[in-house]
Image (cartoon, rainbow, N blue to C red; front, side, top):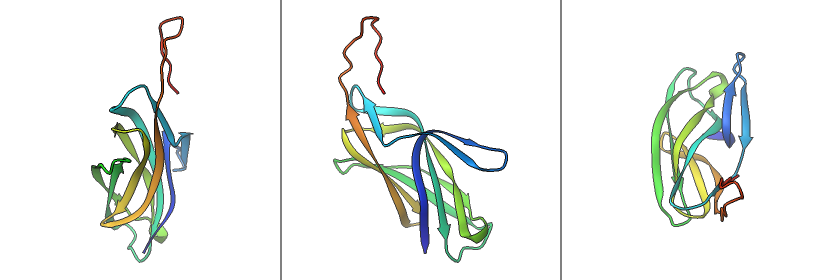
Length: 139
């Protein structure tokens, strides 16, 4: 059995020398002026426990993103190493995260073939009327 303890989407993760993870810019909404779009860069932090797994054993971690229209896209799998007490902790850097529709989306995390959790985020299309300087800012 696998127990998910944390699954968090953020702008940046810094790993301190003592291996503590520092999450910066936690978010659950992405604003864009048009669709389809790609979110340039984000990080998905995870911490889970794998019951009965041997320390130093390897597991396959997979991630997919699904949108409100039912479209699901598989992202590249990665190998993780099980630590003491069955702990698996780390992050996945998401480059060019595909956003096809407005509405609720899910990042679903799988360990081997078992779904261990999902993180919901919302894609919002915003009107980006030009400002006086001709620049546009989207938060």
